[in-house]
Length: 348
Length: 289
Image 1 (spheres, helix red, strand yellow):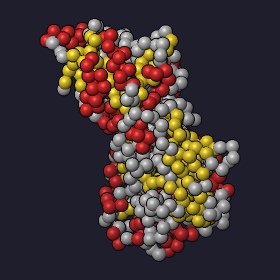
Image 2 (cartoon, each protein chain N blue to C red):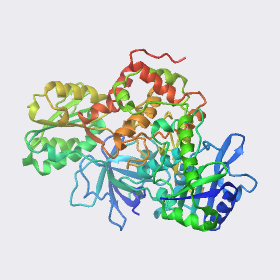
Image 3 (cartoon, rainbow over the protein chains, first blue to last red):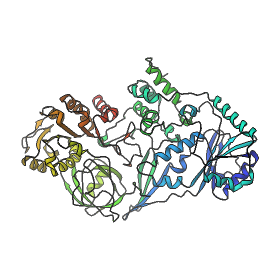
């Protein structure tokens, strides 16, 4: 892997150079403490938010949008609609979000590759951005603190300069869109980079042991904690909507006014919704809120591990900040774990 | 890239009422691409996704064994918006169709065994595909028993067909009805299908079971079969959910890490131990209402 240094003041020039070739999307502070990924071209008076920690919606919104039209239908059949995402550069992805995309890439590739997901995904080059954790980040626990191979270019913010890692041919191409801005790396730069990693490692305040969670959850399937959490959870699905790896969806057919044709849409859904698990004959497989809450957490840290070999939680902390009931994943699993030790935790 | 979510065009060839609210639909693929469910290329127990213009899409199990005729048979009950529309469509109407999906029943693992098919209500539909496949190669199996429970004689599916098969001596028939009637053209036990199965004498160690019915019947029946000595590895059940995709994406059919649409819908009672909410929870829910 090649490494370079980029002066902080040169970042806008670099992004402007990239914008000449592909649409660049960057994180901006849309409202105080409200960050979103947005086209650079539409953020003319907004600086790139280099200090952001989590955007409201994860980058999955680009590749698996909240709602998309998959087909137009009429009497002749179902006609595939082409997603309209032009070639783009997504700048500023933190390691947790790169891991989130890795989960999505895998999920939408296995068995039956998803046409529109891959069509969009292939249009995107990814530039990662290092970060410093806050009190809601627990990527360190989830093993998603660092990324290898999931990005094209990665920038670590050393203050006056960025330490730039070039991983792929696309990364190399981006570098050459403004080659003159990138300087060689000195030994002092390397030391500063390693010092930053050390400082970051020590900055995590939230920890959750996950290695044995599948085993704990397997044993504790009947834990009363879930019913208690079910009493507080609104099952609003906010945690699923902001989750970088939630992929559940509904299909929806919309007729045009003519009644002769229409469109088939795919919309995000959530396993927390009341009707999500409804089966034939109006059977509900997870009738109680507690069952649905339990299903979501089990899916992330138990089911996905069993099926795919790793948890599908990236530790980004979005579900913690989005939950209107103040339920947070760490305390949920802490309660289950305590219950495992024989002391049933009472949820206040 | 081949797109598994894209429905092909099929035509409604015929609709034959089997009961007051259930009909046998015959469909033919009108799509020249030739890939997709055509009545000739599926395994018993697999399902298709059927789209009705403007009403949406839903999964239906295929109710016949693959044959030489490119006609697909689905046994459908009128229960909701989409099926309501299906019952109104004139023959010749165009429909969207994709599949076949799912794993199907492992017929190869049943060879040389005694077979017990346990159907409850509409569960007869997918089991008819197993029955037809078994009858087509009848000499590969030993005794074949069908235990079929339904509410009353007017709700019986494929009655004449089953009774005719029973008369050939190739199939042993046992019926259970919730509401016996004086004029029913068959003898049936008064009760539910679980009680019927309990009353059967089986060579348990040599028996393979295929089970399909409402979720509420699964737990008790599977447990009772186990107590009779049938191996849970040889008790197969279908877990059908209201899927949106059929290919392991939409999540509506997940049970733990298994996708009912892709890893199932057929699971052995052994595999299903870990999928507790698929059947145990449901039994609990129904009992608690």
